Structures are given as C-alpha cells and as structure tokens.
Image (cartoon, rainbow, N blue to C red; front, side, top):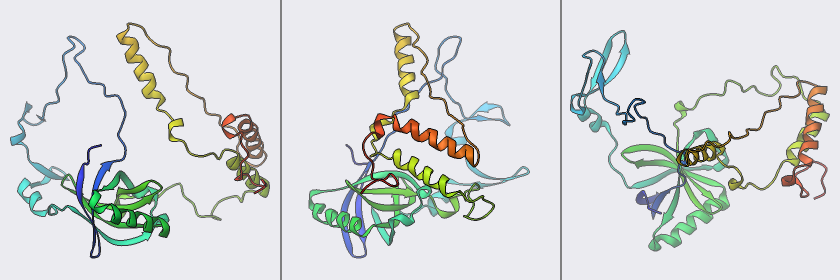
Length: 277
C-alpha cells in the first residue's frame, strides 16, 4: 500500500518518524454522463451567466457573496498569504480520554505506520496509549489543508482521524435530557428491551454487511454487457410495529421471538440480562 504522507509524530521533545495510509476507499461504481442522441461524453464547462459564454480558468477569480448584489473579491495571492506553512509534523498539543471524543467529530481515517528505524518508538506509543485509553490531539497538513486530528490507538495499530472543528458540529435537535417531557419506561419495558439488545449482540464482522446496491448495479452492468436484464434485488421491508405501553411490550416480545430463530444469535450470550456469567 502506498503511503500518502510521510513525516514526524512529535510529542513534546519525543519524535517518531511515521507514514499515513488511507484506511478506507469508496467502492461506489462511477457512472458517466453521455448525450442521449449520439452517445458522446458530456463535459462540464465553466459558464458565465452574465456574459452567457464559456470562460477559461485564467479568467476566474474567487469572491465572497454578501448578498444583494454585493461581494468582495479574493485574490489567489491573498489566499496563499494566509495559508498555513507546509509542515511534515503532527505535533500533539494534548492528550484526552479517548471516550471523550464524540464520533460526530471524526471525519477521515488513516492508518499510522513507521519506518524500521522508528518501529520501537511506534510500538511504545501504541502500547502506552492503548493501556491508558488516551488519544492525542493536534494539527496536520494534508494536501495543503491544515486539519484538526486525533491520534487514536486501536487493537491493530494507531489510527489518525481528521476532525471537525467545534463550530462545525451541530447540536442534536432530537435530543432531550432524561426526565424532560418523557414518560418513564416501565421496568418491564426496560428489562425486555435489554433482553432484546442482549439477544442481538454478536461479535462485529464487517464482511457480513455488504453494499447490496453496488452488487445489484454490478449485476445490471454485467447483464447489459451480456444483453440481459437481471432481476431486481429484494429489499427487506421495515416493520413499524408498536407505539406505547402494551404495544411496545408486545412488539419487543415479538422481536425476541424473531431473534431467537436467527442462527447468528444462536450461541449462548453473556450479555443477555439474567444469563449466567
């Protein structure tokens, strides 16, 4: 795998040479656009709506729209002047408990590797962070963009995740604190729901979850190549059962019966309330 960034991890005066590798890649199938009449490819021109003509890249400048027809123009030189200096270091500014970082802050993930010369130091950082349950917070410049990032230990190594800034993360409009405008769940409901969660708990296997749309699109394309149209995929239908009180309890119990018949959850589960440990 090709390293997309090479630099230094710096913790105070302690330095470790590191490399970053993309941790994931999109597998979506790209469909191009074509002219229906002749099949020719469609190009996307830069078009001025005022002059009603296509323009070259050199004729374009950036603006900030103030509304009402007002704007300010920003030159490329001005943008370069305020851009962060090129850096090949990730400097840890502080450590935090890993569970303090809400998932909504995390953006893109990279595996952190090391050269042979820094292998011992890398293992020290990984082992120590994992034992402490801590993550390092700092800034990294990737492709000329300075991003907030978290250095996080995982079971199989260290992952660096770029992060949203606080003013980019929205508050959850659906969240209500406990006890505010809510009907307290009965003990029966809580216990049965915990039973359902326990019954459906199994080791995570990412390979079990596939992109069914991508698979259907591949079959469609293969069928077009072979001049045949495959059958449409069958999508599971959602069951919106239950509302409040007795309806909820009945729905939960039906769910338990359904899960009990699923071979994935057939093994004894210590997470089940009331199960022997």
